[in-house]
Image (cartoon, rainbow, N blue to C red; front, side):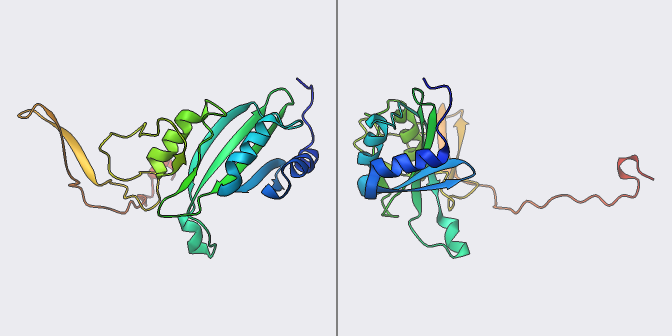
Length: 201
């Protein structure tokens, strides 16, 4: 392992040379991001893992992203994406990889579970919470919600109250699902206008 990490600017130049036109790189706040389209994602990830000067042996995080509200501020583009953080222990360097899913109705990217075993549960979580499908994942199923759960709760259009509520029914001796009974509400901060509030006179 090297004692000092390579400078972000040098790593950017190095990865740009290795990846060529398969990806673009950007540098902000001393952190390097590789932007790749879905068609090149799997190939780029394999290169980042094995190529000399890259050697990112560990996938330390993978998460889904819903960019739907970006459209409210005039930014157009695909709604769903995946962000991955890779670590090279041997070269003491890190990189962030971002890929966008080209189809909003069926967000799909390749799985990298066979490259890094740690991607397994992360990809299942992104599938469960965002509905992103990881093509080639051997066991893609829900991991945090119930098997019969409807929808994907981290999508920005998912209602805060959910679609159903569950309770234990003593008569039937099982858990039952019913339509949500609470009304949606807007939470307004409580304002206290008492003159002596907090012991101030």
